[in-house]
Image 1: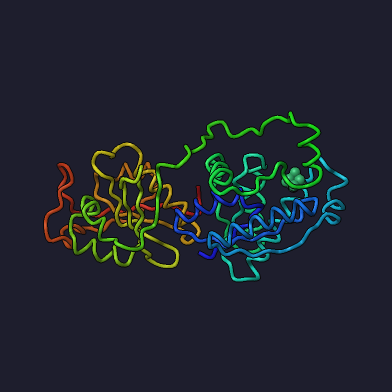
Image 2: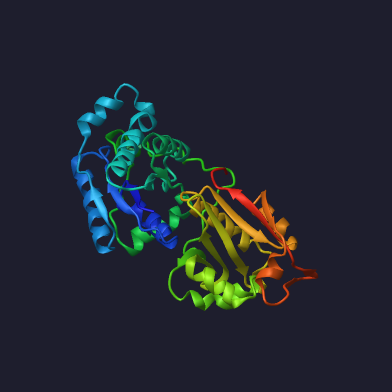
Length: 347
Ligand code: SF4
């Protein structure tokens, strides 16, 4: 994935970059914010991002366009709706266009991090521009880490923390009307605790290190070794302890397969496997249309509940033909392999 992430400022970028790097994704940042005024404020935010990206070794592209005149001309007739009618649009459309013209295949934005922005509308606009420009949109609800990112930016990195959204009108509201209501988050919304203790990462090196756990789901080492080499391994840790691992392989340009998912014994039936599967769906939906999984009879209900809700095919005598020893799962002697799939183009 070649990801271009629109960045509104350094403090909002910190958590988003950490989040994506945790997923094995390295974003290139794109600064285009003609909505920040006056010029001294624009400059301090831009330079803060420049310094931060240089220090943290992150690629960043700066479209240096201070746009007070143009911005005011476009919002002045409807100030109440300036965010949705102009401000989000002009920045996001330009980001998608830049991605298209410069070889990026996916776009996201740090605007999805702020609890003060209109999250659903930003998502809707990104989906719209994704279709218009034929560029994937990587959606993540970065708001879950809002306070974690805020603390890191402020207390650890000492970044410049702005006091208002950006435009002169937001500056006026901030100082003239400081008792504005707090934004409303969705009903079941939860912030992740600071220093997130559950982390899922793609592991490129030392894949063999996880062999013992992988063998609990698929007991023949030679078979596991083969797909482990060809596939992508993901590791879920909780407070740095390995809880769950999974391996994905490519079948063809449209299909990938979950070849193995194994959870450490003492953490089973606590939802970690489902968390891993949800993560894999989100991660691979940009790349493939379908994810398949093969299972013995006993585990069909687990996979169906986790989202593999469509039957695909059965391979008769699979376990007898492919494994040297008999495969026993609980009280079941495994013979046939049942395949189910998740349509990654749907929720
Ligand atoms: S308040 Fe913020 S999002 Fe809205 S128009 Fe001003 S700078 Fe843009």
